[in-house]
Image (cartoon, rainbow, N blue to C red):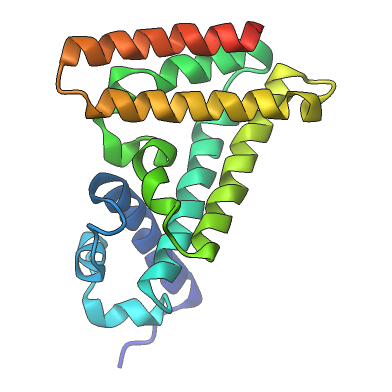
Length: 192
């Protein structure tokens, strides 16, 4: 029997979480079975329970990880203030973001299923969404972020809903126009 170090086990667990996050965004929570999630990570079904107690446990962990990564890679890296928000908005409403669901926003990809998920998954989502919202609010009102929290929440909702709709449209020109209008609407909300 091969013994793995704690570091190897943690790296393997993180690989499962990361690949599951991409698959969940691509195929949905209900459309992603444990066998597929483990295959994506290069592992067998039999090893799943060495890392997670259930699929719901993995989904909760992957949702939290996806939101944490989105904050770290996008929100935390953006410029401060309004310029940073504009940078985030323009990135969010890009055709690349729309067309690469597995690498894109977990909000736009999973919201409808998260609403029907376990309390733990919904709480992980809420915690992650609040981190994004607080990052937006800190740029909207650097000296008083709590005053900008509702506006930041509205911004996140507008962004996710617009991206979802753009992804759903078969008319590419209309979908592109919607993204452009999304930029305009989001920037107008910042100035409201």
